[in-house]
Image (cartoon, rainbow, N blue to C red; front, side, top):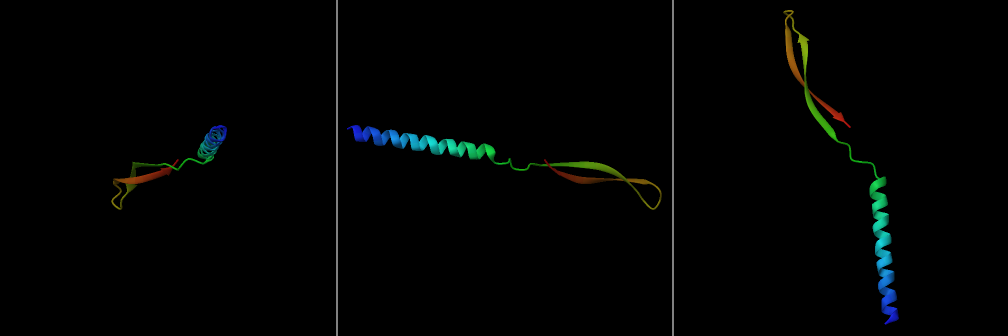
Length: 62
């Protein structure tokens, strides 16, 4: 009876230790880079001297 309780306690302590190690590894890892996509309008001069507006996709990695 005492041996069974001791084995159960050891098993619970092992599980708690493994879970705490997993939590530590998870917080220490660097976060995944997030990409933000946006479009910006830029003015480009044409041969006629008139402005043409073009949309450019801008991708920033944060």
